[in-house]
Amino acid sequence: MNLPLIDLHMHTIYSDGAYTTEELLTKAKNSGLNIISITDHDTIHSIKEAIEIGNDIGIEVIPGVELSTDIEDKEVHLLGYFIDIEHDELKKYLKFFRDERIYRAKRMIEKLKLLGINISIDDVMEISRDSAIGRPHIALALLKLGVVSDYYEAFHKYIRDNGPAYERKIHVSPQSALKLISDAGGLSFIAHPGHLKESVLLSLINAGVDGIEVIHPSHNDYQINFYRGIVNQYCLLESGGSDFHGGAKGDEDNLGKYLITHQRFLDMKSMLHSNDD
Ligand code: AMP
Ligand code: FE
Ligand code: FE
Ligand code: ZN
Image (cartoon, rainbow, N blue to C red):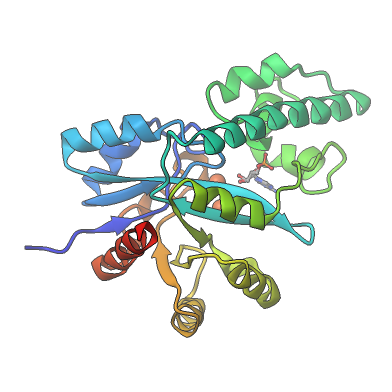
């Protein structure tokens, strides 16, 4: 039997992906994937539907989420796998985070107003629909209203990090996100660590993260070997995936190309069982 092809990092329209759950699953299937995890930013909206569709078309869907946290003013993404999507505390946290994003979008809209640009929260929510509202939605709203002539101009002129209409998201410590993932029965991973300082990486390992995302499109061979070395040195787990978003990101070809081995996946599962003891 062929070993399963496993990609544990991708996004739907419920965060900043271009495709619906069903479209994403179809693409995953067409790319030959057998086991996937959907890891939307700060939401688990697609998971239930993904598992059902996966059952129908023969793809195993691991419940996942990508939580935004920050350390020293830098955003650090943590992946949670095998989480219980009915876990109360997790659901409460995600709802809180979602509401906070709406307040933040309103603050950015206020800043835009001071710059003479009038867009409303409704203009933005018409684009974000079911997903957690973020800067890409504001950029698309500005584009739609003709304030900017392309998507990137919106970031460049207004909402890039520390841009004139930028507002930070609320601060979430990695420690609280790690606890949340573990309380919900999941395993935690540092997402795409390529941009993180080694001291930050070490502080996350000290804080009890279960593993590191070693395979990611942003990592070169040197980085893959480096992170794999750390995984081995600290007895951590290894995860990986395409971080597929689709659409404007131009990463259509990535699906099916960023994989972890079946053994690494089994290593994860065995940690779940040892947590039950
Ligand atoms: P948010 O979580 O609302 O801060 O939005 C973050 C998302 O905005 C990122 O995942 C990117 O998709 C997008 N983004 C942030 N900065 C830029 C930039 N300078 N140019 C284009 N997209 C950006
Ligand atoms: Fe993203
Ligand atoms: Fe990320
Ligand atoms: Zn991601």
